[in-house]
Structure formats: structure tokens, C-alpha cells
Image (cartoon, rainbow, N blue to C red; front, side):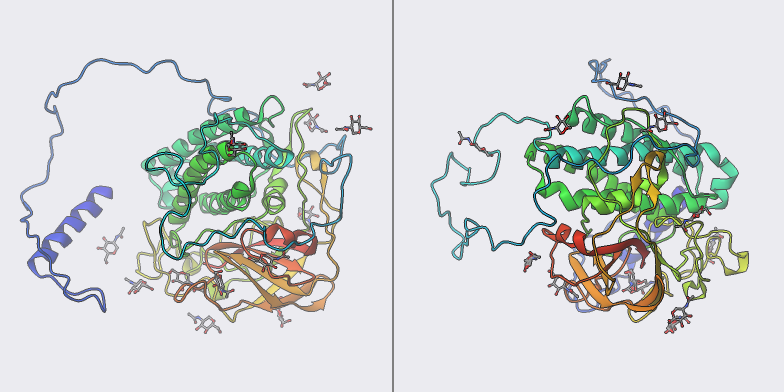
Length: 493
Ligand SMILES: *[C@@H]1O[C@H](CO)[C@@H](O)[C@H](O)[C@H]1NC(C)=O
Ligand SMILES: *[C@@H]1O[C@H](CO)[C@@H](O)[C@H](O)[C@H]1NC(C)=O
Ligand SMILES: *[C@@H]1O[C@H](CO)[C@@H](O)[C@H](O)[C@H]1NC(C)=O
Ligand SMILES: *[C@@H]1O[C@H](CO)[C@@H](O)[C@H](O)[C@H]1NC(C)=O
Ligand SMILES: *[C@@H]1O[C@H](CO)[C@@H](O)[C@H](O)[C@H]1NC(C)=O
Ligand SMILES: *[C@@H]1O[C@H](CO)[C@@H](O)[C@H](O)[C@H]1NC(C)=O
Ligand SMILES: *[C@@H]1O[C@H](CO)[C@@H](O)[C@H](O)[C@H]1NC(C)=O
Ligand SMILES: *[C@@H]1O[C@H](CO)[C@@H](O)[C@H](O)[C@H]1NC(C)=O
Ligand SMILES: *[C@@H]1O[C@H](CO)[C@@H](O)[C@H](O)[C@H]1NC(C)=O
Ligand SMILES: *[C@@H]1O[C@H](CO)[C@@H](O)[C@H](O)[C@H]1NC(C)=O
Ligand SMILES: *[C@@H]1O[C@H](CO)[C@@H](O)[C@H](O)[C@H]1NC(C)=O
Ligand SMILES: *[C@@H]1O[C@H](CO)[C@@H](O)[C@H](O)[C@H]1NC(C)=O
């Protein structure tokens, strides 16, 4: 398959050289100053031995041990049946206010450079004044506040589930199951590699926390097919990644932020790869969004069934779930035909049902614009969702047990829901909520662009019901939390 693709594209480039055609409207004078001839002789059939090139025998020095092998932890799964011995989020002995009060801009945030010249003495050659952690202090790669600790501990809960999850799909589905979903042995090896990446991420985060670092738990997954496994993965890595973008620049420890960024860059690639395996557009947005920690914890917690005794608990909030009754099903070539509640369960990040009739499915369709088998990029001629679509919602009341050992309780401090808050890319957009019954209502998917030509709402994104519509931007989005009545995950594209 890969060989065929490469061969096809080298044929294409040979053609392009022979007969250059303008393919980009408005981009004229794209004179190709190159001209090569492509050997079109027979392809290789014998592989090796290669040339013997200069090299010496060498081996790696002993490396830092990982906190877990791969695979590890409990491999049994399912819901938690016991009784929680403790409940609720971790709280401080003293809580100073019910919400953070807004303040005017920081008085020192005034730097403006109209000339583009250096305005301050440079501390050293080629070293412009300013920056944090640039004055020679020795880096300390440890969390440096309760905020840092709780954020990285949340990140570690996420890394642990990914480690188990990626292995779990490989363990429960057969080679044939994967092939039916269009995924080959090489794709399975790739997913296995991603699981191993998680052992490294878990090691890094554990070390930055110290001895109270959370350990791996036992999980309860929603998927029943390979497509649903992949869909669950693209959702889970979406909120894992966005959860980190939401807090990374608020961390006290810049050193921790540095290493975390280097691991979340990998997670971002995982998210894109899972979208490709589902035949979705790999990245239908210009910016990846950030969400508050309590949002990431709300999405993640329902899939953790229990954690070992003495597990370090988290301080974040679990919001009640928000459900999109007509959440578009990415397994359909015609997402408009999605039936109500066509998802596999009632947890907010559950995948769409992949067991729809074969003649309604796009999985094995080899038709450009319609097929949704794995692909580097797919054009869906019928979008999953679109501005102006009526979106039916239902939402849960607070007070439900969720998460490890059912020991966290969903909570909200919001009043009656009145708005639907759409969080994607750089944007927070509110639409009015029309309530039509107890915990039932609808809204309309908004239009609106980030910058000209980039519709804000697309991809796997975040939607909340709120009781107010405060103006918030990516760096103060967490001030929405006191207004959040329920929280869901929306498949816009
Ligand atoms: C918080 O209160 C508990 C119970 O009174 C006490 O044991 C603990 O030391 C207190 N923690 C702090 C950090 O003050
Ligand atoms: C160096 O910069 C850090 C912030 O990055 C600051 O906390 C510290 O006080 C500075 N040290 C000196 C000696 O200026
Ligand atoms: C959670 O459940 C596990 C498995 O039954 C048990 O070992 C652990 O002690 C429980 N933890 C809490 C906090 O109840
Ligand atoms: C949990 O912590 C208590 C108190 O520190 C300790 O006595 C107990 O052995 C710990 N249990 C486990 C399973 O680590
Ligand atoms: C899906 O529904 C929208 C709104 O009614 C409509 O404009 C669009 O044409 C429909 N898609 C197809 C492929 O029929
Ligand atoms: C979700 O589904 C489970 C299993 O069917 C059920 O036990 C639970 O009550 C449902 N929860 C909600 C909030 O509807
Ligand atoms: C898909 O369709 C194209 C064009 O009709 C054809 O060349 C190709 O072999 C088909 N691929 C598969 C896997 O059926
Ligand atoms: C794919 O989508 C792009 C952008 O929407 C469009 O310009 C292009 O013609 C489409 N290509 C195919 C093969 O459908
Ligand atoms: C989402 O992005 C894809 C890929 O560019 C595009 O085809 C689709 O129309 C977009 N959806 C919306 C609602 O703009
Ligand atoms: C969605 O909401 C509209 C408006 O209240 C209603 O007419 C329609 O029946 C709802 N559809 C579903 C599937 O709940
Ligand atoms: C989206 O965010 C950008 C950047 O802050 C802003 O310019 C734009 O007006 C926002 N668009 C919408 C629809 O909110
Ligand atoms: C959030 O930040 C924006 C500036 O980016 C500001 O206009 C807005 O008032 C802030 N919101 C709150 C509630 O502080």
C-alpha cells in the first residue's frame, strides 16, 4: 500500500515536470527552475546486502529506568462495583473566595516596541534583555506550587490511561478486526509504539512530582470495535492535549513547562494520527485550543474505574455531563442521517456507534469525498456538522459519583443554563440555549471565524452550558468554571 502510494506520487512528479500546470489560483509565475528525469525502469525486487559503510560497534550507556514497563498495571477492566472509602476532590484547609475576581491588566505589562530596536541594556552579546529563567539560575525541574502539582498530577492520570488504552485495543482486537477497519500490521506497530511513548511521559511527569505522584489505575472503556477504539483515542488525546495547552503557560515552574511542552508535542501527533486512522481530516483547524484542568478531568474521570489504595487524589472539579443527541457519526458517509444518540454509551467522550448498516457506512467506501477509511487526508464532501445546524442537547444534574472508585462527585456552582459556550481554536463563542423541557434543549451551531477563512468551530472540540456569557480569552478561560452547568465533547469535523 505504502509502496504503491510512493510509486504513484513519483509518477505524478514526473508528469508535473513534463507538463507543469498552474494548480494554485492567484499564484502566478511559479516558474519551475528545475527539471529532472525520473528513471521509470523496473522497481527493485532484491533487497540487500547493502554497501558496507564506515561504522564502529557501540552501545548506549545505561539509561534512566522507566516508572513502568510496557504493558503494565491491571489488565482487567470494567466498571467499579465497590463502595468508595473517601469522596470528593482534594480541598485546601482554607479556601479564600468562591471565585477569582477580575483585575485590570498587570501594571508592568506595558512593553511596546514601535521601532523594533533594543530598548534595554543587553545582559550579554547576542542576548536581548528579558525572559524568564534566562539570568543564569540553575533550572529545577520540579513542580513549584499546588497549581503545578495538581496540573502535572492530572497530566499523569492522562498519560497512565493512554499507556493502558493503546495496549488494550491491540490486545482485545484481532489482526482481522484491524484489517477490516483498514489498519495494517504496520499501523498496529505504530499504535504499540505510541503506548511505549506513554511510559516515557509517565516517567517524566512522575519525576517532576516526586513520591506522591499518582500511579496507574484500572479503566473502564466504552469501545466495542476497532473504529470505536480509534474514535475514543482521537477524543481522549484531544482533551489530553488541550488540557495541557490550557495550563502550561500558567505553571510556576518554567522548567516543568519546558519538558511538558516537549511531551505534549508528541501527544498532538498521536491525536492527529488517530484522526487519520478514522478517515477524518487530520487537522481541520489553524490553532489547537486550550481548556481548563477541570474540563480535562471531567472528560477523563468517567473512564477510570478504580485506583490503588493511597492514590494521590486531585483537586479539580467534575462537571455534570452534556450530551449532543444528534452528535454527527463519523462512520456515516451522510452524517445528516445520524440517528438520535448514535453513540455507544452515556459518558461524554464516548465514541460514535460504528455498527451501523454497511450500506450507510463510509468505512469501506473507496470513493473520494465520501470514503472514511484510514488516509493521510480525507475530504468529506458532506461535513460532519455545519454552522446553522440545530444541535439537540440533554444534560445531567450534579451529584453523580464518577471517576476512580466512584469517589468524585459531579458539581456545579452555576444557576439555570442560558448559553452554550463553544470553545475551539482561539475562540469562545456563546449561542443562546433554548430550554424545551427538564434538562433538554437546543441551540444553533455558530458561524464565525478565527481569522478570515478559518471557521472557528471544527474538529473535535469543547462545548459547555453556562448561566452567563462572560468575555474570556485563551489566557483567562478558566474564569468560566463558576458558570459551567454541564460539559460535553462535540464532533464538529
Ligand atoms: C489541614 O487540617 C487537617 C485537619 O485539621 C490537619 O491535620 C492538617 O495538618 C491541615 N493541613 C495544613 C496544611 O494545615
Ligand atoms: C533570576 O530570574 C528568576 C526568574 O526567572 C528570579 O526569580 C530571580 O530572582 C533572578 N535572580 C537574580 C539573581 O536576579
Ligand atoms: C478503590 O478500589 C480498589 C479496588 O477495589 C481498592 O484497592 C482501593 O483501596 C479503593 N480506593 C479507595 C480510595 O477506596
Ligand atoms: C497507605 O498509607 C497508609 C498510611 O501511610 C499505610 O499504612 C498503608 O500501608 C498504605 N497502603 C498501601 C497499600 O500502600
Ligand atoms: C444536510 O442538511 C443541511 C441542512 O438542512 C442541508 O443544507 C444539506 O444539503 C444536507 N446535506 C446533504 C448532503 O444533503
Ligand atoms: C448511563 O448508563 C449506565 C449504564 O446503562 C446507567 O447505569 C447510568 O445510570 C446512566 N447514567 C446516566 C447519567 O444516564
Ligand atoms: C480505489 O479506486 C481506485 C479508482 O477507481 C482504484 O484505482 C483503486 O485500486 C481502488 N482501491 C481499492 C483498495 O479498491
Ligand atoms: C478537497 O477539498 C479541498 C478544499 O475544500 C478542495 O479544494 C478540493 O478540490 C477537494 N479535493 C477533492 C479531490 O475532493
Ligand atoms: C472543517 O474543516 C474541513 C477541512 O478543511 C472542511 O471540509 C469543513 O467544511 C470544515 N467545517 C466547517 C463547519 O467549516
Ligand atoms: C431537537 O430539538 C427540536 C427543537 O426542540 C425538536 O423539534 C426535535 O424533535 C429535537 N430532536 C431530537 C432528536 O431530540
Ligand atoms: C476568534 O478569535 C480571534 C482572535 O482572538 C478574534 O479576532 C475573532 O474575532 C474571534 N472570532 C469569533 C467568532 O469569536
Ligand atoms: C479576560 O481577558 C480579556 C482580555 O483578553 C478581558 O477583556 C476580559 O475582561 C477578561 N475576563 C475576565 C472575566 O476577567
